[in-house]
Image (cartoon, rainbow, N blue to C red; front, top):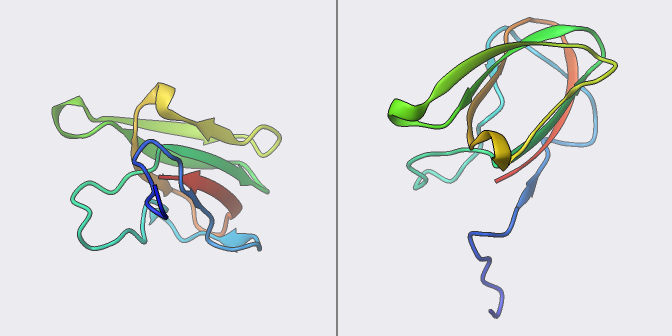
Length: 104
């Protein structure tokens, strides 16, 4: 394969090593190359220091489904391809300290 990454490999993504603080409706599915026509994560592991609400869009087009979830800091949230690709992940609350790891 000489350096090429196959599409079936998960490529890890993390915004950094420190906790971040949210703004309301902050989109986490960002930072993709401009030539990607449907940016999405395959997996996400999300944790927060206080309870919060997130809005997740799984699937795209006519199959897209939006889910609003309450996240408990004791449990966090993990999604993977069993649930479909993650096209949007927004923290609905401002001032939430959070951290996430994702792959695309």
